[in-house]
Amino acid sequence: MLIQFLDLFGTAAFAVTGAFKAVEHKSDIVGIIILATITGVAGGVLRDVFIGRIPPLALANPLYVGITIAMAVAIFFLYKHFKRYEGIILKFDAVGLGVFTVIGASFAYSMFGLNFLAMAFAGVITAVGGGILRDVFVNEVPIVFVKELYASASFAGVVAFYAMLAAGIDINIVAIPCIAIATAVRMLAMKYNWNLPRPRA
Image 1 (cartoon, rainbow, N blue to C red):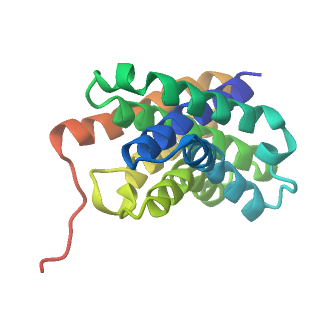
Image 2 (image 1 turned 135 degrees about the horizontal axis):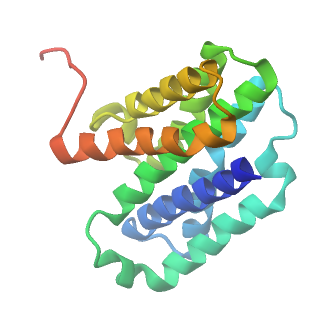
């Protein structure tokens, strides 16, 4: 029950970032809905396809797309109000990153048990897949490739998730602190401009 609630919450958080991005690129209401939906569900769809869950949960359950549409419509009407709060899109993105990291890792755990590689792959692809497609659709370099720690923040959440499960802690107890870890790493990276090493030009 907790995992499903978190999955829906993460879908809503990422849908908000997609809707904001669409508004900033002068999209109409249809474009806003499309980009919000892609951002909200694409990571989970990619995860399910790769691990063999057909049809993907986001397509089998209309509630997911319903949430993304609702978020898109809300941002369409309330964008100016939310825009007053600087950096809100990045905060939603960080929260969505943390939530989807744990959701992806949880799905892998339910199918493959305590398999770190499966959990890492599912967690990271769920967390970054929607954001990558969001940025590509508006002709931007995906944030995961150029900004402060992003995929690495997701990976940190997966490591914590795996370690706590390996220690015998219940998955429902593990979920919240691991979401907090991934989200906190991402937010700290934004605040202090933490980056991974890059090659010299």
